[in-house]
Image (cartoon, rainbow, N blue to C red; front, side):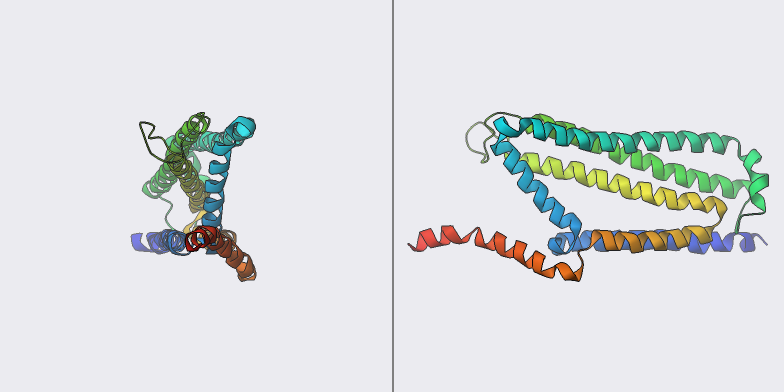
Amino acid sequence: MEWRNWYLDAILVPLALVMMICYHTYLSFMVRTHPFSTLLGINSHGRRIWISAMIKENQKLNILTVQTLRNLVMGATLMATTCVLLCAGLAAVLSSTYGIKKPLSDAVFGANGDFAISVKYLTILTIFIFSFFFHSLSIRFLNQVAILVNIPNLDPNPYGHFFLTSEHVSEMFEKGILLNTVGNRLFYAGFSLMLWIFGPILVFLSVVGMIIVLFHLDFVSRGNNQEKQRITDCRRSSDLPNGDDNDA
């Protein structure tokens, strides 16, 4: 009898989590091996160009740089604050499990006992706590970038006693954006898991729908192959003048 109450939760929810992990593992692999087939890879390349341009034109574009980084920090702060509020609400609901068990018991497919409800809310609470953690780390890195990018006369090559380079600033900026992206993905997963309160079937359907939407947002459509090829050709052509000068 106990298995009949738990089998949907024991099958569909882990399957949904495995699907999310597999999708993001595949996305990470594509970003590393074929970056220009994903929006994450294309945006990463654009951010590195932007950081380099802001450093070179620091005296003219310092206000634009600070405002852009401030907007990123404000977005991460908003997400972190939302996670804290959701964690506080879930903790309050978890402390009054008896009051919500009765009205939901007839509407839930799957396990709905005291232990099952505690597992559900603790899982959702853990996801939002980790999302808050990653957003907090992202804010830390972005604040550091806002300071380092405005250093005057930042040397792009590590010679002499001045070891701080533009590549180091770009790496810190990419780490901040990556942590922000991970926090957002955990936030999305937390919202899908919130449907677990009403049963595992909704969780599975929500995760399938979320993966379909993210796939169309994360990957460049085939119609943009010419644009990707043009970007690649531009990168290659940037090395041609050096080769021509050497030949000359």
